[in-house]
Structures are given as structure tokens and as C-alpha cells.
Image 1: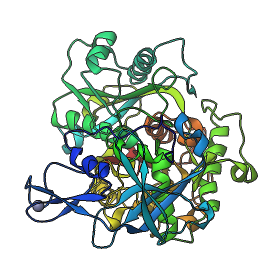
Image 2: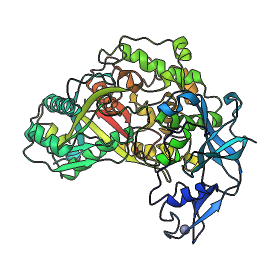
Image 3: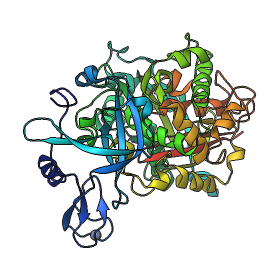
Image 4: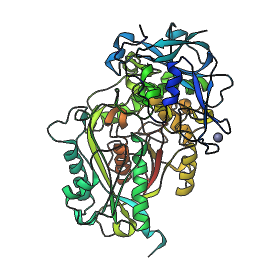
Length: 139
Length: 393
Ligand SMILES: [Zn+2]
């Protein structure tokens, strides 16, 4: 069973972020990088902000990250999350991946124990239909 | 023609009634918006024949070409819409009206926004089609409170002296001003410190009263040149500058993947623009008598006080705790209509109208002798925007 119920909004891949979701389907947390100059970017965009190349590579992030910020959601913005309240939303950074961050959740944690700077470990949440979503637990 | 004759000024304002979201169901959103524009035209002492342009923002669905027909404009010379789904574009739309009027491409432009959240959608909930929704929805982040609370937590981490007491002061100030404003949705509802702290969490660190209202209403403002304004009866309010824009790398910013640069992450995305705005206006923050600062969330008002230079980084808490923002004795009262926390949420257009009222001497929390007013657009998004208004008297 996934962290949120099945009627949770799912990613709907489009032209510009399709490659990102292909990696998730294979349980690989990858950020997009320029195939020419290596500049990292997120969310995916079809052209490099540094050199305007359209060549793309995908770099796999470490499975441990650091909390850049977090919140604790108590209000149901969608009926799907009512049974999951409260939950922790988080912004995670990864060593060696300057300038990109990932919005995610920290699960298996007392919200009161959350701290900016704490280390968290990746786990893959099976949301069905062959798609997996990265969430984290305290390291 | 004198050098400044072509410069833009505000000559009319109009608004509908304001209600809790879903409160206006007897007329369409388009109709209350048209009525607000008609009221602004009348307030300016103009007729539809004097108006030849429209500017709006926030994906406003009140279509300008249809509005031109509905209101009977003989000729339209300008229509523009600012990108961005929220209030960041409010003063950006004003800046477009200024560009139209000052370049001579139009004579008089209406800046407007109307929203009835019972007829379309509520901004505090999941909405289909948000840009970069793929990167936030699967994690249960659906609405601005859930996006901007991440930014607020980081800001409080960087400035541990900022506390909920300071956020509370923003909420209490708005409410006490609304209690003097009969048009405010919260006119008859007082708010105490205890009630603020008893408010339920929405998304920590935001409690209920840190978050703006969800309301129905429409607002319109008429912009023309100072030269044309001299032919009108009412007092014109000069626009010393109206700017919009963004620092690097914001894009969908906190509403999307939150990949803004570290140096600007916990900010309103206004500090570069604010500096240019004061330079353009030729005045400094200490010259501002009263301010209307976009209050979708209490904490962003604190950040704005710093980013606009009213106090140093991290000192906004101390600034508001000193009573500086309170009417009538504070050195710079803010959000004197009750703002979006307590008057109405019209994506910042009600803040612009309150700025005009202050400089006309017509606010229900009138700052005595107010000559200059800062009004900001939505904060912590891209684009963001701001203007400095000055009375001619
Ligand atoms: Zn490149």
C-alpha cells in the first residue's frame, strides 16, 4: 500500500519531463543535467540555461540527502490526503548535486522531531501502474 | 507639455461587495467585474468613451475583448495579461497600464481582477493543471499555504529571532484595521492573541490566521496620464513607479519544485526590484508614510519589510513588535483596510485601492497627512511587483 491512498493525484508525464518519470519507474532518483556542459537543472527543461544545448543526461543522486526545509501539513487540500494527516512535506538536497532540490515527504517520523539539516534515506513508494515515487525516512 | 505630463496616475477606483468564498452566486463573476469597472469609470468622472485599454493578471477569466463590448468602448488600443496564476501580477498589470499610457499607446487603461471562488475554484485547494504540479501533488502539497510554509520554515531557521509572536502581530494588525472597515469581510469579527494561537494548523509554521481569506469580489483601477487627469474633477494619485519582475531561477518557484537560488530562497523575490523601484521613485523607504503589503501569508509580510528595506534582514520581527506597523501611531501603518488576511482576497487589487484611498484621505484607518504609499503585488512568486504612489497635494 502506498503512503497516500490510490486516488492521490499522480504525475502526468509531458514532453519536457517524460525522461524524469522513466527513471522513477525504474526506481532511479535522477536529476537532469546538460549533455554538453553538465549543468544540473530541476524541474526538467528542454534546453540548458547555461549553454543552450539541448543534449541531456541523467545523473543518479545519492540515496541519502539533507533536509533543506520542511513543513507539517494538517489541512486536507484534496480528499485523498484526509486519512494521512498530518504529514511532513520536505525539500531535500544531495551531496554533489548543487543547485537542485527535491520536493518529497519524510515518513516514519514524529513531525516534532523534524530539523533542517537532518539526514534522510530514500525509499520507493509503489503508487501502482508501474510507477514509484521517492520518499524519505530519517537516516 | 511639461516633462511629467505624460506620466501615469490613478484617477478612479471601483469595487464590488466582498464576501466569503461562494458568497456571490446571484450574479456572474463577469458581471461583478464589469460593475466594478463601471464604478471605477464613474469614480474617475469618465465615460466608457474615455477608456481604451485593459490590463489584468492571474489568468483572469474575465475576458477583456468581451469586457470592451459589455461596457461599450468605442475603440480599444491596449489589452494585456501578466503571466502567473496569482497575485504576483497585480502591480505588474498596473505597470503595463503605465507603459501603455506613458508611451501614448493608450489614453486610459483599466487594471482589474474579479474572482468568485464559488463559481470557479478555491485557491486553497488542489487545482488541476498547475505548472509543475507533477513535482508537488504526489507529495500532498496542493495549495499556496503548503508551498510557502516550506519557505517560511527556512526563513525562521535562518533568522531564529523571528517567532510566531511576530506572525501573530501581522494577523492582529490586519484584523484591527478590518474592524474599522465596514466593507471588510471580517469587519464584525475581532481577533485576540489567544485566538490566533488557538487557531488550527494549516501547514506548519502557518496557522489558520496566518493565511489569507478565500473570498469573492472584484476591483478595478483607472490609469491615465497626468495631463488627461487635469481635465477630471477628482484628485489624481501619481504613480512614481510601478515595476514587476523576478530574480534569477524562480520560474514556478515555491509553487513548483522550489529550486530558487539558495541566496534568495527564503525571500519575497522582490529585493532587486525594490531597490530599483525606490531609485525610480526618487525616494527612500523612510519616506513611505503607509504601505499595503501583499498578505497572502503573515510571514511573507515580515520578509517583505526586510526586502523592501524598511528594516535589516532578520529584523522585521523586532520592527513589528515595536508597534511600527500599527494605526494610528506606528511610523508606517500597513494593510490599513484589513488586507487580504481580513478585508478580502482579490489577488492584491484591494490593496491597491486602499493605497489610493489613503492618499485621497478616505481610509477607515486614515494615516494623517499620508503623502506616499507603497503597494506590493504577491510575494514569493514570479513575477512579483510593487508600486509607489504619491498624492499631488
Ligand atoms: Zn549546458
